[in-house]
Image: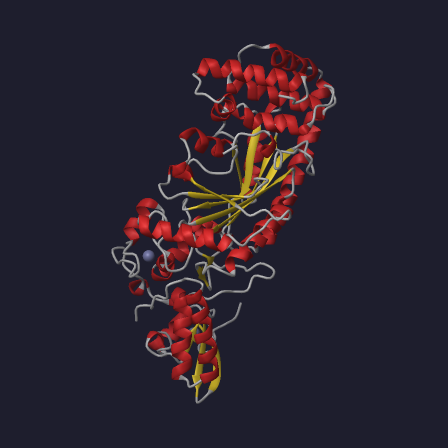
Length: 351
Length: 165
Ligand SMILES: [Zn+2]
Ligand SMILES: [Zn+2]
């Protein structure tokens, strides 16, 4: 399977993308369904299998830039741990891995994936490092058009592409970015930002749920409306809004640094992470956020952005166990996590 | 804002296209005038009428009742409001008068805007309706083109479902 190889993680967490010091990654997702079939919540196993085989067949002729076809992963053939790793890598959703007829199509570099038989029959997903929604959208659309020539997507002349939930109807497009916003969090201006964004039809939530401390100041920001705007206009509006957010994030960070308390907190975080023998996921995320901030503000010596991005995924419970090649209890995981972080921060990611 | 071409008082809310002796006649009417003139009632039986916004103009009594079921998948409006999920693509057409206000509230719009290079697609049901209309109006070239489109749709694997009449 090799689902837990570090190498395969690099593509969308490469950290080389535009505005990489505020935006970790960009993702666009297109929801589609086939005419003549029920939506997944209402379909039986026979229909679900037929839909999966039609999509797999239609996608089989597709090749990425380097000539690789998509991998086909039948979720029920994977171990629970392997399925959980797919969720931690943001390739499948928690809902998807529970589906008895769920299938995942995955490109070689893991930036393009298709969840089959999730909430909708197809969720086409393309990820790109940094703020790069336009590329992510263009590439998702290119793959979409390949399928569209071969599959009858459910479409209504007034409402556009039809989805199981009307909140996704029209473009079926969700454009989202993963942002690092410690400046907003530490100055207690995040709430105000969320209100402003919601007035522009944009929603934000912590990476691992609402206001969760374990989120490491990482927020998933996405468009809430999918109808009434062309896809490229949704993407352009998101891009513009995120640029403003990142700009403000930067002035908040500079102000915090001027106040003089940030430098000490950053070095303390770095000290703990490079010496601790056991660390929880929540504490690790919080301290890694400070280290990332320290690198961005040139308080700390530079670290490859790829390294900090990969740690977001590699310190998650299933991923740690997959890397260890064995099931671990929480205390063992805290020790493995501390060791991995020490190695990666001090040896530049040689682990 | 366009005023009703019949009464000249109320804002036009309905756009009516009628084919009379092969001539296309277009009119902007308010809902009352359209109903009084019978321009909405016979719509469903008379294929000579194309009414862009007819669903908005239907009186509430004409909307499907909450317990009515989608003829394709059997989902009721009550089922939908309980789960938030529709059952199949055809549910949208069946529940459209109930759905549009809800969609407008959630999405702030109730009409799709196609992207650059996105060819507007027609559902098999819409193609079938247009085909029947073309046959009745003896537009045989249009009918042939629509049959081709339906065949292509079938070859891509979709099952053509007939709209309930
Ligand atoms: Zn009038
Ligand atoms: Zn239905």
